Length: 87
Image (cartoon, rainbow, N blue to C red; front, side):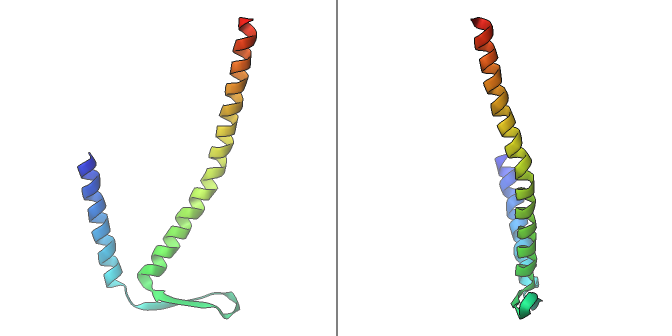
C-alpha cells in the first residue's frame, strides 16, 4: 500500500512539474491601490489553490475544536457521575 501511495505521489508530482513547465508565461495580477504582482501562470494558480485549501481548513477547524471541547466536558461529567454512583 505504501508503494502504491508513493507511486501515485510520484505521478502527481510529474504531472504538476509538466504543468509548471508548460505554463511559464508571466501574467500580471492587479490588486487594489495600484499594487500588482507579476509571476508565471503556474505559480499564480498554485497560490490560488493553496489559499483556497488553507481557507477551507481554517473554516472546518472551528467545529472540530468545538466538538473536542464538548467531548472533554462530557468525559468530565461521566467521570463525576461514576464517582457519585460508586460512593
